[in-house]
Length: 615
Image 1 (cartoon, helix red, strand yellow):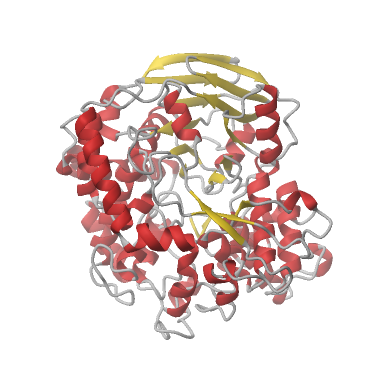
Image 2 (cartoon, helix red, strand yellow):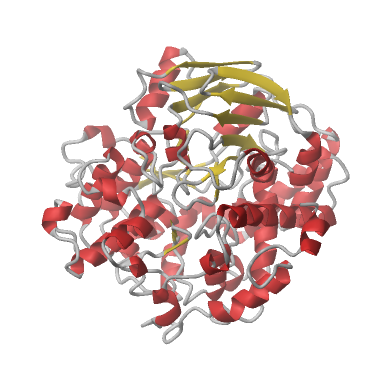
């Protein structure tokens, strides 16, 4: 059956840790990880709860394929009500932590209440207890991990923790594991910090042995790994260049948001691309990229390990940043770079290291800095307010802001509130490039039309990982569609949203979907969990999860009016590239999307949709 069948419930207010059986009816209906944890949140948390109050809950959850020999089976999710958006928050991470929790014999951990003092949870197989974290509070993610491994004399201990950003209630604080893998978006780290929960340390020695049909599972996972290896994206592109392979591609098609979405192409894209990371520097003759790295059970290995230039102004007197560590992914490189007009690769890597070290989402951070730089250039914000000159293109300002935001000092406190609150405070809410308060990722929806609908309807606020239509519109996976046309995009977005919900909930990486469809995932789930997991059933499960998240948001107060894009994308045409003269055609796509979804014109679920999905 592949679920461990057990969950941990931790009441931080009372200081208690209790085991309870997993609700198997829910597991069969919602699969695991994202779907199953959201079901628990929906059943147990009032949608109108204060995200940073003690009544909110936060769940770490694995999927049925997490910890197994399925490729990329190392994923886990953190689910809560998000402080950045006020919507359902579900943030996904790789590395080794998720598999470790499963191998300790647990499907998920539910935290409720608030501890009176800083604590961490220690889990070793069946044993789990809350311990004092006074000595860890104020430490970075990196220091926390090192301290706990030494303290428990166990180098194989896996840690999921927050840094200063989570402690300081930065609204886009991340939860970080394995030093630089992160449940990065929507502020899950701020919820963790609000509960005085510093870390979860896990050691699992049991393995995952409860596969329904082990022989069939070994056979089918072997076959599916070959599909990944033979695919141009998962077998060559991602291992060689990582997600950064997209920088020049997206720039060329005129969909790289630049200088807070003023432009759709960045003249400095080549300077911050995957190719630039692999090119030896003039200063020391060494490339920034050291090697690639894989998460648990992954046969793709898209992760980057990089080494910063020791002579760069950002680290000249900071040897703690000279070693090899987590390198730039495409989204981070874009948000820290093109979004701000910064083409200094080393400055981007420094800001990226700060985000990893202190647990901060580089997408929301970088995009918020983009709004700050625009306000500065407009004269709305001054050097006196910011503490530094901050025009577009200032690598120095980017690095300073990263430090200030993580530590919650100076103007960094304001940046830490995200672009929606910041731009509203200074009288220009239209300059927040966000949906539901969450900042856009690295695709301009004037040049990739489907992404506009994806952002507008995403349940966790603007997000590319809920419906990556870039695969179809740019890469031709699984079929090629025209990125400049709105035709057929409502159906495409729905299909991607439902399928992605299944990938996430199974406990595997969404990057496998460059090579796999649900038809590749289905036999793996059937062999691991049971023959009831047919293709038809999985399609319904994906749709059920999406609608459950939507319904939670509706009850939290979100309406059809929140399914929109900033005026810039709807009214200001792209200035250059293939999309020149185009705005996003959301008004054309949205009504059709609601229809395809089986929703009312006001964006709520129709009774028949609810009944069909068992909601």
